[in-house]
Length: 219
Image (cartoon, rainbow, N blue to C red):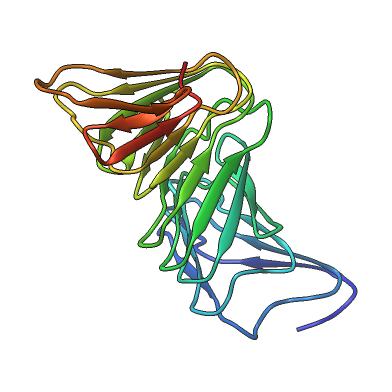
């Protein structure tokens, strides 16, 4: 659909929640277009082959989810429950879900938290923090939290910002099973329990922890 006026597509009105699906080849262009959810738990889904919507998406009130089916996707976190997906701006979404392709989530420079959950999906996915002091808690294979209130799973690659980044494995967790890059700042990686941990230093500020957790820029 195309046009030059402002158009708002509403769904999930009345508090019951709803699902809005964006299909490949049905992208809206021209004018000012927005999608707005209601008061319930709403879902906006980018179907297979659809990775961009030429407008903005507002989840509305409620615990809302934004997800993609496939493709290589770039998510930017601009603040609490808001950001952009492949240049499509979104707001008021508590949960972000990647698809079968590669999903890259990156916090804007000064952003501390998303304040919700990030699920990378089934691809080889990454999460990059903002340029602030960050506290990472690793709670299992490819999952954990960033600055307490952002919870993530199915994320294989973690990258800190220009500030200090402290990565801590939760009690009795012996592997993250992915890659940890401290980036700039004075960064640390610590195990919190477990016995017989094996640290292998392979170069300056880099190495492995228990074989399958690789780290760089950890001082």
